[in-house]
Length: 438
Ligand SMILES: *Cc1c(COP(=O)(O)O)cnc(C)c1O
Image (cartoon, protein in one colour):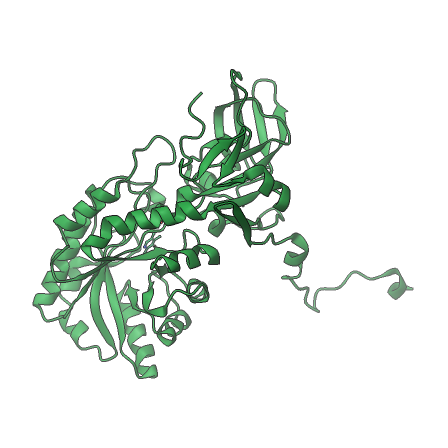
């Protein structure tokens, strides 16, 4: 049997008296209090990741904006704000969430390929640090909106460096054929157009080449391209002062080697550091993924004769990554298996009416029984934020543990409340009551 706890960082997760604990709190106790399934985050581990990145990049003067699409919970954002970390946002909704959590507008960067006029205007009104613009069409929209407000907007242009991030096709973003960024060669020919803008100051260039990148190699190549493009534009009189190095730093989910923040610092030192630009990164996953788990209860162990299914009460609507990206999450029992327990092979599935609602196939685990608790590891990133109510299911709670305390940081949104989100218009006949037809 593989070491079941290998993907749970030891600083935050450990068995005590045979019960899996997050810091000082037994997961079984939280399950008792809030019901299952639920997400659970370790505040200590979140701080540990934030501080590790700051320790690696701080000496190079690199500022950090957390890409909050990985985890937008207010408690997580407030924790990072207290660590001096800002936000990288991709929508007006995330802008509102970041500001509500106490992240200063001056520490917010707005990325995204399809910003609406309303979203851009809200960002200008809030006075955020920088808008990362992805096309000339968007640049002209920012110009118009900033002119209407009588202000000058500071923007960075996201370039497409045409590098292969060596990751899953659905999360690569830095190839020419991806929808993201501006082609570098086109950009260099448009210096006069950039200088002619009266209400937009192009202060920098930005990149983001993809997600779950496991080595510094692709970053080295991308940062070199970024620096060359910036130097070219600067030589043509566009006064660039900032480089945004993007995010995408990977996390081991299975057998991958750890992505090293020290190697990242090395790639930055070797390319863009000390070249007269203010530097920033936009990590999402790498700050939050392994600080979070999804806790679920086994609903049934179904004996299908030729194989065994462990049917959980969590499903693809709660954690979509396995169904969407064929992603792996280690599955770990909350009660430590008895010594010498003989492993059984399970397909671990959710209750949703799709075969894609599968968390693991042919996984060897100590024998499970209905009612047992399990955790899906490394679920702190792109878990809760990608959840839905598919199959008429509740939005599940998020819990944060800090030392020996825990708190529900998002309550469960039950179906009664969700029904209230809908309305039936007058032109749809209401069912007649027996009285009305009499
Ligand atoms: C998603 C995204 C990030 C963060 O990616 P991670 O893989 O979670 O680090 C950073 N910048 C932009 C523009 C993004 O879209």
